[in-house]
Length: 322
Ligand SMILES: Cc1ncc(COP(=O)(O)O)c(C=O)c1O
Image 1 (tube, rainbow, N blue to C red):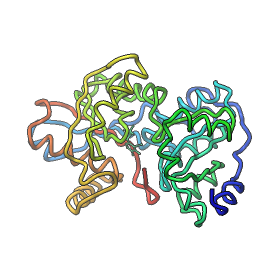
Image 2 (cartoon, rainbow, N blue to C red; image 1 turned 120 degrees about the vertical axis):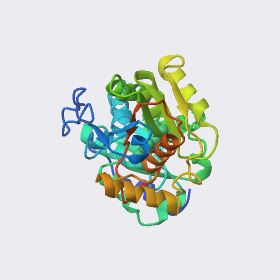
Image 3 (cartoon, rainbow, N blue to C red; image 1 turned 90 degrees about the vertical axis):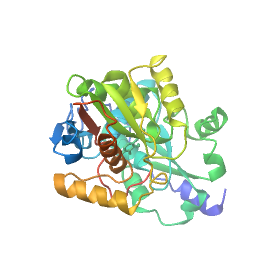
Image 4 (tube, protein in one colour; image 1 turned 135 degrees about the horizontal axis):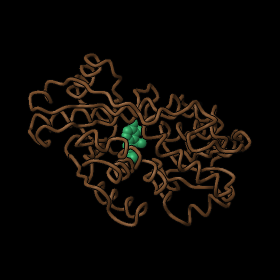
């Protein structure tokens, strides 16, 4: 470990002392808005085909822990508290939304959090705005070399972290584990009977895995390159439910070059959507989802006459990251 990292890691702020977790409705917090609103928008590409487009406004669930973060994190914080663990530990990059949401939820729910941050060199630089936010919310930041970070799923590495931080409750990078998947079942249930198809943008696939189990036919739009996602959704459903659940498929080909990549065409599309509907379009995930659904509608690749829900899983954020 470099001297600077040692200094930085020694200087980590401690989280607020543990307090009792609120009841399942999120008691100690501003109340979550659940079920989240379902809002119809008039889109010519859909109307031409006799389809309806509805926005499932998960971005409005909570001002600090919104979108799929609420659905994925709250069950984990509850499980962490029930396990008696001294803290919840998780992983992320320098601009991780997941780290920020975990820090905020931990502070609000009174559970200490530790963020293992990819990149030892970051310890030697001033904290960026995203990590500053994490620290302000009491998260202990542990900067780790990339080689160690790559071991984040290995039991041996987790054992090393437990040796250092105590018997922490570990949540994987991106927050997708069985508890998170179970937390997303309610998203599908809220849509059942109201729409024929529910679509969501996918990173790790955890939100899709849960939503599909509880709801109508689901469509996932991968925002990363690669063909790992279908296997990952199956793995997460196996972990959460012991086997496959629901009907779902992936709409591939809308990653626009990969994670956080964009093109002028996608930017124009998202700007235009925002302007016409007065809804902020988060650019890393939600823009690709809406673009993909529009393309599917135009191609006649959605069931005739269907009501289609697009899940708005996040808000546009100047600090946005993975
Ligand atoms: C705004 C937003 N939408 C969608 C997702 C994808 O969720 P998942 O990783 O469960 O597929 C994420 C990732 O956390 C996200 O931040």
